[in-house]
Image (tube, rainbow, N blue to C red; front, side, top):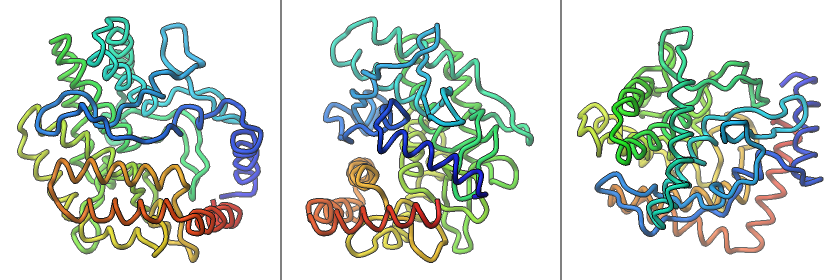
Amino acid sequence: MTIKSRINYFQRIFTAYVIGNNSQLTFFHEKPDVNADALVREVGQYYMSFLHKANYPGPFDNNGIPLIDYQGVVGKQYCSIAISQYGLGHYNLYRKTGNKKDIEIAIKQADWLIANLEKNNNGVSVWMHHFNWEYRDTLKSPWYSALAQGNGISLLLRVYLETKNKKYLETTQEAFRSLLITINRGGMLCVDKENNYWLEETIVDPPTHILNGFLWTLFGVWDYWLFFQDQGAKDLFDKCVEGLKNNLKNYDIGFWSLYEQSGTRMKMMASPFYHSLHIIQLRILYKITNEIIFSQYAEKWEKYRKNWFYRNLALTYKIIFKILYY
């Protein structure tokens, strides 16, 4: 980060974390959970409930699309990840209650996704973020993310199931292609030197393999396979799962989980929220794959989470990392 970027960054996190103003945290930092009504062998309710996200208080645009207030110089922005998760939360509510208002809200979000799928410089269809984002390397507008593609796919398929309108399938297929294309060709797929497959939440060099974004994207790949029975999707899913099995140990620091493989001298610890999210995501992945390693790490990390000393050690470490790095 440049000095200017770091100043902007600390202004934003002070407003969100310290003052507690409405911010991206208002939307994203719900208590993670496994949706007990979700299925893993057919596309149905989404794997997490997202009920807090469905109850997001706003702001919204005139069409009922959530705007996320990132505070500081970034301000209020459309975020396709949030829009998809908001839609998935309302889809779950609709499936639970039958309230047509909820499916109407989910359809609005899916229609926004259709209208806003764009071609990047390589001609790959992606959902762009049209604002700069302070990360290890500042993500310059417009930037794209495998997480956005995975969540978008999950919502579009579910809206199709209710509407039978093929426009949702066509956009799903177009968006999915980005996950099969390597980063150097404009996609989000990273194949490392050990032939492990990663789907990158942020496109930076060297890649950081953000764990929560990778796992959420995998759920979108699994949905695509379930619906289309597309062998390319199944092969991608299997290779990503195998790579994660090989590397999950690298996200365990002995008392907490890592957010990513930052490549910095200090490792980037997960915040308490993201550590809890990792646990839930691994439990879901275990239900999908029956690979015992994911259940084992979920339980191990749950024990870390319940340990008062570990929680506070991780939080202190995280604060120091943020001050020194990003």
